[in-house]
Image 1 (cartoon, rainbow, N blue to C red):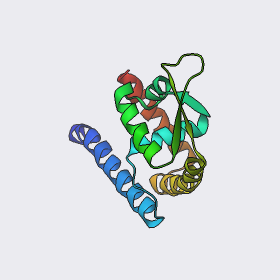
Image 2 (image 1 turned 90 degrees about the vertical axis):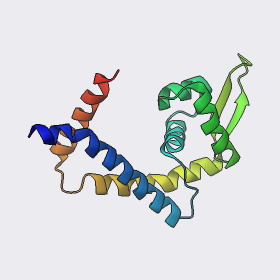
Image 3 (image 1 turned 30 degrees about the vertical axis):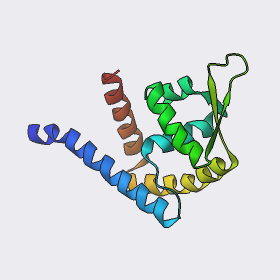
Image 4 (image 1 turned 30 degrees about the horizontal axis):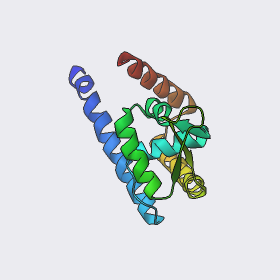
Length: 143
């Protein structure tokens, strides 16, 4: 049993790789650009929040501002987000989805549904909730 517990992190890493491969295949089959998970997280955060400053976005995706800036530049080049200077503080950049970005999110929402269905196959609703609560507890251990 103890060895199984020691392998938990390896399992999480393996699942992360499988999820990335699943998403890459689904995006490719729909002719969509392959983006890394941080790009997807940015697009997701912007679908929830109409516009965010670079600093707010960095906090939400758990990356530093310079890394977030590089990620946003790629999305901007792909036409998925736009950036403008904040009116109140000219040092701040406001990031928002473009129409193309909103369309991309609609398509990826369907892919996300497929992912969730695959991820939780054969789990009861109670097991899904319990698993999610365990993940939250693990995440808090690192905060």
